[in-house]
Length: 320
Ligand SMILES: C[S@@+](CC[C@H](N)C(=O)[O-])C[C@H]1O[C@@H](n2cnc3c(N)ncnc32)[C@H](O)[C@@H]1O
Image 1 (cartoon, rainbow, N blue to C red):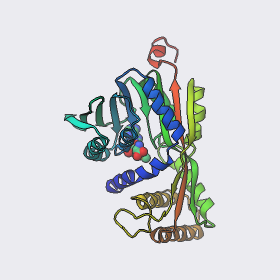
Image 2: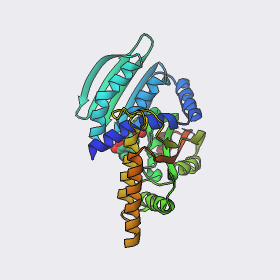
Image 3: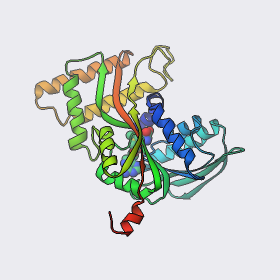
């Protein structure tokens, strides 16, 4: 399971690269640029560290940054420990020092003439850590957790006027082309699983952020769509090399999505007829994927918001 999760998280990088809402991303980079350096960034649910690779590749970080990337899955952090230094070096940094602080935590320093980037990769529950960050980031993360507890925890992690950047937050749309008569029912079952059975999260998390944050006194600075569109684009798959398939490793992303739908919908199939239909649907989709014919679309939102309060101070004063 871990192997397939790691392959999926690595493969979805190019899908996310295309999907990320450019306006919200640029506004996030501008917000970072206004903070006093070194700028402290805490990433929750960092997965295999692809956001760090993306931020350095796009030159979106200030000159002096201290970046703490946290995931509760040790396999993700192990993978990130191998790959993040390569990605940072490819963006022009030199890796100056690398040390294991304690089991599950590695820090390295990357530099060039003008810039210093300290990255700590850490296995931990993102809601059990302490920090005082200029920015908290969680990509494809806030749809997995309960916002009622997650947002106060983020407030605790932020310095005054710090920002939350929540890109690729799922927002209630999963579809495939060509269409199938079962699509809509299957989508409803899949999303009900997120809402009613899966531990934490919701199928409408993107929009929920847009109401929950202002209700707690946050200013939403930018928001926009970041839909995934994965399609056979006539590019060569890595590995296939036949010139016909999905870009890079994106076939893995669709395969993982079908597996997730298969596992989730098993709980909702009401009778034998529906079970047979579901099996037919899955077989059809897997055949289409193998034949480079399947297009998958998922609707996400990117949200950037600023927390104007200082929770610790307010707590001390007994006001929250
Ligand atoms: C869908 S993945 C996204 C990973 C990465 N942000 C990306 O976009 O590729 C969500 C990640 O959140 C991690 N996660 C879930 N709950 C967590 C928590 N409470 N603390 C830390 N990590 C958590 C999971 O282990 C998983 O790696």
